[in-house]
Figure 1: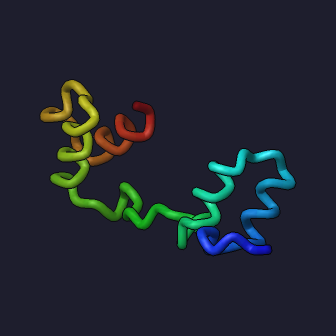
Figure 2: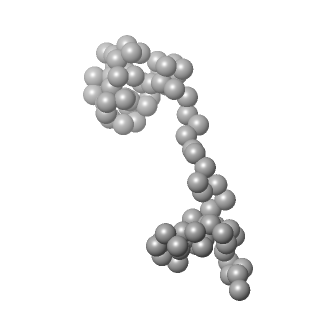
Length: 79
């Protein structure tokens, strides 16, 4: 008998067959967009220098104020 708390019973059963716990399987099966690829941010090359600077500041890249756009991109990719 299906559990009414499980939104995607097929996904739940597939995860259980792979060895996931009941709790983890239920969490994944009840997430509406699970399994879909995320990441809707723009490529670094499509961002402005200010956007890159702000991102570098957020992740704590030192020397960012003296970097040009290409250097910011390099620093962000290699951080």
